[in-house]
Image (cartoon, rainbow, N blue to C red; front, side, top):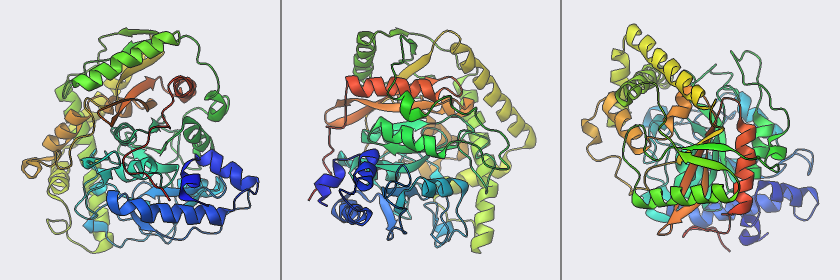
Length: 477
């Protein structure tokens, strides 16, 4: 199979070719391996590859034989390394599959490697000291986003049609926007975090994927959603498959447009123009989109502080556990300056401060929920600017404490984190570009309403398709 034939298909398309016997899973795997060799040296998205395990019989699972990559964090694969982008966890091997990994296997996916993440996924750019920076396939001097930047760059460059990702403050949607991909953050409780955790970062973090097509994300979510034994809670199961929802018309939607972010930097002119174009597209599709001022429920300063306390209070014992298991110290030899500063900040968070952070989470959740009594969907840019230059995040970062680093992250991505705090589903759709760089638009719906987002995403993909756009670095024969 030629690389060009391989990259012309999405995951569902590849699975169909394999099921019909037009190509074997081994031939597809070989094409994927050659795609890694062709482009990964230029983008540093994949940190380790391995031969795929025996694939299920063609057609026996919905995605049987489709090459897949897992993020180096958030999912464990028995016998494979999981190093979290950090020297502290270097060489760590997972003893068992996580629940999500089992579902990836049941879906028929052929996992061929793991993708880069910033240290402990603690950034929205992927520039860890341990692996080195991941480069954006559209412009190699720019960031691929984070924390699922390796997965985003790999999918955008044609290495795999879809890849695993996680999202605690925008880590699916940020790389989706930076890399010109579709990325949906599911509802809190939609996908199990077990058995190693009941919830991650007090429910801020969820599992998901990045893909080039809407149907790939929909099909995969159908296969991995739902509770596992011991889960403390779960989102109500969908009424019909998401893959079916993506083919349905969403009807006339009431859409609130948030142009100015709650905090952080204002949208640049190209992003603001892209938002206006998106409003025009929605109007042409019969939707009612209006610019609105939407309350967050707390001040931006309270929002940042609450996030910083929840993030770091969770980060500190997590790092302590990794250090104990690895037999390594927690210091400058094992952690990057901003991670170490955040670790120390987390150990200083008091019980009272942590409870106050949970109260902020509740206030934001209740406030956002009220908006959905009037609107079906909230629209904003995914990010206030196109992909930033590598190194932009790190300028002076060694002088920041844990609060200062979170403030920088949320300043760069002020639109995304509210969906994590409230637990609602949110997606980035690659509807625009400026000067050869992708610009994503973010759509957010009420708790449990991935069905509505997939209907809208499918409609947008049909009205303004994007898969014909290819980055400067693209796997080719």
